Structures are given as structure tokens and as C-alpha cells.
Length: 137
Image 1 (cartoon, helix red, strand yellow):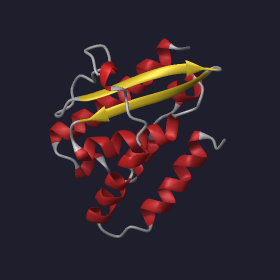
Image 2: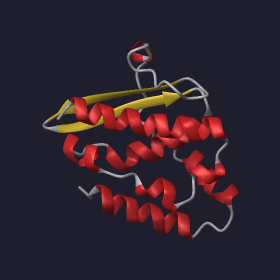
Image 3: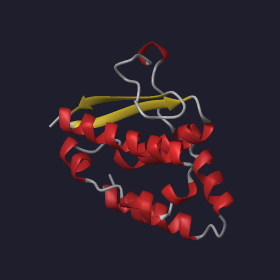
């Protein structure tokens, strides 16, 4: 399995080939089918990500010392962003995830191309991923 940083590097190379932000948005939205979907019955207040403009959910399951996330969002862009983030961290140890800095997000300039409310949602999703990792240390 590739490390988080190796996955990040591959994504950075993909994003570098996209000249316009519209292309980058489309790339993120094209990741939606890869999102490991949370089961409808798991969309509860316990899995809801607070601070997102559109309702979003994240759940982590620990198997063999590694975390496997599922998630969803009512927003198309939200689904793509969650898919992007989970692509990086799924299948890694809680320590690796807790220590990861999510450099990719700033490196591609994502926060600068989101509305303030979506930027807050992005931060909330990252914070929730890290909190779930810490809970499983």
C-alpha cells in the first residue's frame, strides 16, 4: 500500500496538469464514485460533521489496526472533497492519519477557491478525520 505522502504526491501531479480551477473542480467532483459511502442507517447525529454548509457524515471503522472511513454529503462538491480526503487516509493507521498535515489541500489552493462557508466545511471534515484517528489511537 502506498503511504499517505505517496498518494498525496500522485494527486499533486494530477492537479498540476490541470490549468484552470474549473478543471480542478471537475477532477474533484469526478472522484465522487470513489467515495466509500456511509450506510443510510449510519447517517446519525453521531456521524454528522458539524460546521458543513451541506449535511455531511463521516464514520471510521478500525480493522487490523487501520482505519477505514465511509462518508457522504448532500452537496456534490462536498462528496468530491470527502472522496479526495478519504483517498489519502483510508487504510492507514490512526497514528499516520493523526500525524498527517493535509498539505495537499493548501498545495492545490483549494481553500482559496471555496466560499467562506465551504472553506469552514472543509476544515470541519479534516478536523473530524483527525478526531476519529485520535479516538482510535
